Length: 271
Image (tube, rainbow, N blue to C red; front, side):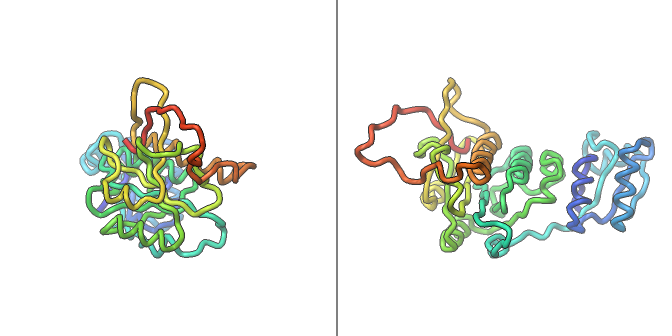
C-alpha cells in the first residue's frame, strides 16, 4: 500500500476528499496541537487513527522526515484523456500540462504543486519514462498531488494528437523555439504545455507533434533552468494572461517576414 508522510501532505490528502486514505499512524512520542487537529480531521472523515512508535514510522516511510504522521493510501485511480477533455461548465478556456519523461520525483512534485497553484486543469503523464507518484512526490508537492487531476497514458504522442483533435493547442518548451513564451497567447485558446526530460528536453517525435515551440530567454551565463522552474515560469505567465485585465495582449502569430529579425539570444526550454 502506498504511504504518504508529513503533516501538510496528509492534511491536504484528507481535505481533498479523494477517499484514498485507508488509515493513519501517528508517533506515540509526539503530542501537539497540529497532530491532534489532524487526528480529529481523520476521525471526522471516518479514517482510522493509530499510535505507533516513531521508529516504526521511520521504517515504514523510509525517512525520519515524516513529522510524526504516516498515512496509508489505497491505489490511485488515474483519469483518462477523455476525462480531462470533458466539458467544464466553470471554465471558458482550459490549460493542461503534459510531462515528457520527467523522472526526478522532486521535479515532478514541484511541477504538480505549481500546476495546482496556477490553476492547471489537468496533468498528463506517460506510463513509461516518468517518475511514479510516490511519497516523495507527494511530500515535495506539499499535498498538491492529491488535488491535481492526473491522467496516465501509454503513448504521449497519441494523447497529444487526441487533444489536438479536441481543438487544444499543443505548446512545447524548447531552447530553440520561437517566439518567447511571453509572446504567446495563452488567454484565448485551450492549450497544453509540454515539458521535456531533465537535461535532454522533448523527445523528437513529441517535439514534432507540438503546434508551437516556445522558449524562455536567458540573460546570464547559464543557458538552462531546471524543468520545474521553467515550468513554473510559463504556467504563471499563462495564469497572468488568463486572469489579467489585458487577456488578449499577447500574440500567437509568428513575426511577419518583413519584420526585422530579433537579435539571437540564448533560450531555454525544458532542461
